[in-house]
Amino acid sequence: MARRLFKTFIAFVLLALIAVGSGFGWGYAQFTRPGPSDLDRALVLAKGQGLKDIAVQLADAGVISHPLVFRLGVRLGGWSRDLKAGEYRFPSRTSMRGVVGILRQGVTIVRRVTVPEGLSSTMVVALLRRTEGLRGDIGPIPAEGTLLPETYHFSHGDERAHMVARMTGGMDRAVAELWRGRAKDLPLASPRDAVILASIVEKETSLRAERARVAGVFINRLRRGMRLQSDPTVVFGLTGGGKPLGRALRRSDLDGVTPYNTYRIDGLPPGPIANPGRAALHAVLHPTMGKDLYFVADGSGGHAFAATFAEHKRNVKRWRRFKAKTAK
Picture (cartoon, rainbow, N blue to C red):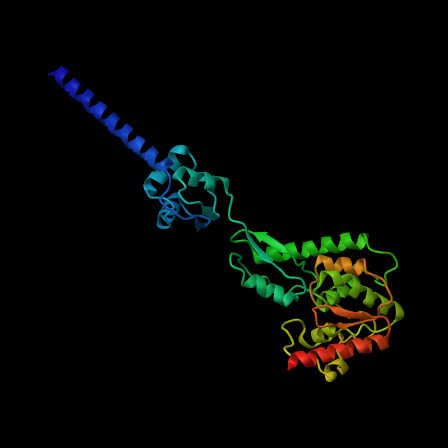
């Protein structure tokens, strides 16, 4: 009788071991086999989520098929504390083991936001506020000319205030570097003067090939004590950079009194009128020097330059004829 009971016990243990082994084998196969999704999936895993919530979220998104197997695999591997929050892209057919590897490495999706040259600080802040993936408030609008236009990379959940800090740090470094290597004998007393003039050049032309020549015109005017007579400064004096003027400048605008009306004030305006890019800063600190004192749009997207007022008047007449012709 005892022998029979012993044999029954051994048989039961063997069957249990076989069942456990089969279950483990099935679970391992599920854990390592390709996942169910035929498409890449992007998913945001929030900070503070537990393993169960992560498994359910992955299953709901179609990344994995068996949340329980995923949880058991993570626990058996000792990886529960290694899974990092963030936004991830899971390639199609990623196995559960592959998913764990992605979450342990913490290689999140890299997002980007491009800040174009010549935007006002108000416009840059508006751009950051509508950029998906960033969070938090920015606080006061940064001073004009303190944000470096560039393409910035970030991860989901990064702070907008941190992005602004990166932009201000980038501008500080760019200005300091370019100021050290500036051309000699420029009529610019400080790096801030360079930023002010670069912001004007940035708004005057969008053509990279013209920036240094436009800068040269303004440098010549400053050296001769001539007023800059820049339309974009007048616009900034009217709008403060918050929005486009929405109409053409009038004679009354050019005659109006604002600190930024360079038709009425001598020298540079009191501050930048936009956030200039590195190219505009370089152009101002390495201008193309010639005899040019004037420029006007030429109808091709660029400008016609002149060394004398008589020549400039002829260029203005051509520009007005072009405008009249295209308006018909």
